[in-house]
Length: 404
Image 1 (cartoon, rainbow, N blue to C red):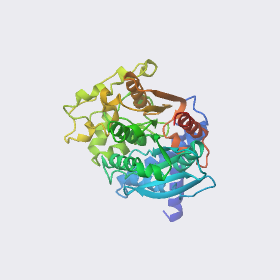
Image 2: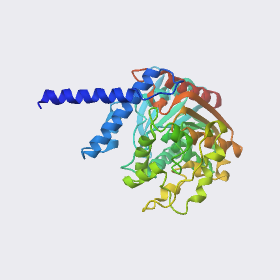
Image 3: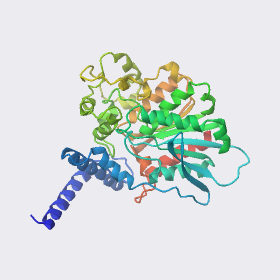
Image 4: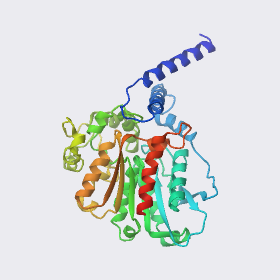
């Protein structure tokens, strides 16, 4: 077969795959269905090709996705309202958004931690740059986009430690004064795995007398909050997405703990937790914490213990799974905003956290997007102009505007 023949064959296979993934059923109430269907098919095709290249020994799965992500990176471009600067805090890269106009009072600040399953992404990607610029403009706020180091090159707890270092650096009185920030009006925000890092960092710092009075709020967008149970109702109902499937989520997220494929396979079966960890299940037992409407006919089964030959202490660490924090640790948390999406494999993790926080008296505001999908925040400001992403962004920024 000649070169043209191979090109024709590859193109034909591409069309067949795209047609196959395009006809996977979508939930009825999703807006802009054709756009979501197109994005979902694209994500599944990219994942398929990444797995194929990895199986052929050409390139790692996550590296294929990273190449695609790099195309979406932006330069620090200032505009008439906002000065945008790339710098570093404690040797961790950050992107600052600083309002240009003079303010008679100190400004609020938002530290935003991007998602990407701990392995992908950057605060410099077009969608996050758009969101953080939007936030700075709307709130007249200083915004810090944080580029923590990524797995698998930098495994747990590197991303968490990077986030804590940046937050601590920013919360210094001299730094807050330098940027004209009100030390009583600071929010830690994040989406997906960034929501996990924001949650864990807030839990740590809110119990530290040096920092607790400087964090007014945390804002979490469809956060990933636990590695304990991979078969919650939303994990089953949205196993195939849209956009983020259970398989892709586990394949990427397990790399934050280890590159050992045995953990990935055990997590798929919900058989990854070590002996001696059963006492932790009470913190994530969805049958105790989920509202009745989300339980449906699902039956709770504990994760199976002791199937892995290797012990990974990270699986029992609240810095990886913030839902493992005890009630006494949660009591001191600040004002909290959580946004969940109905058609999201991670939906139940956010819902459980809402219940647990409210049970101990933390003030929680909750927006649930019935037509929402996971990852929609990372799809704003793209060429296809997804209105659902703008809707989620407006909910988040509106809450910040009222509460910071």
